Image (cartoon, rainbow, N blue to C red; front, side, top):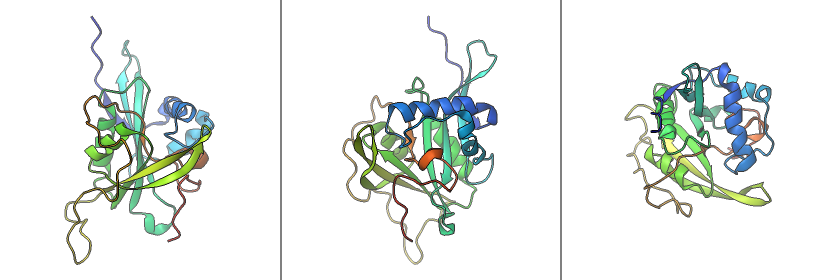
Length: 239
């Protein structure tokens, strides 16, 4: 009889998680277009990224972990982050979010647990919007974000090149902040519906969906969740 799985706990990330978090991210660098990074990282190269996500404030790192079979340590299953959306000061009330899971941690609801904890942690921060960029196709990621009331707002066509081909990145947006703070001045809050046509393949039934990596497309050599200073695949607006 298979052993019962340990309970998954979500907590803020710690420096002791760095090796496991780097290993998870490097899988997506090597094997997928989920991130537009093309070279793997050492833990020391990822340390500035980890330190840019403290336990409080708008830029968080939440980690999902379970006890190993012997109960002597924790096994990291995945992580979710919120990071600066753009470096210019007027963007300070917007964040970019992402989630990455171990390849063998899918179909367990870990991505849902991580996003739930991350968004709850951000609820009291001075934030107005969260954004996620999803390299296409990625049906599971689109469904995960829609489950948390993200809405599709548009697609950057062939914005990045990896593995010898160009990739589209679709962008999703979520309203943040206490209830009643999202309405535009002098008007009513617009309905939470898609803007434009959704990317192909994102309207299928959620039955049998698999959670994997989701969220931001990268910001240069520090990965998809870095602090300001790198360059990202989608071009920054001129405003």
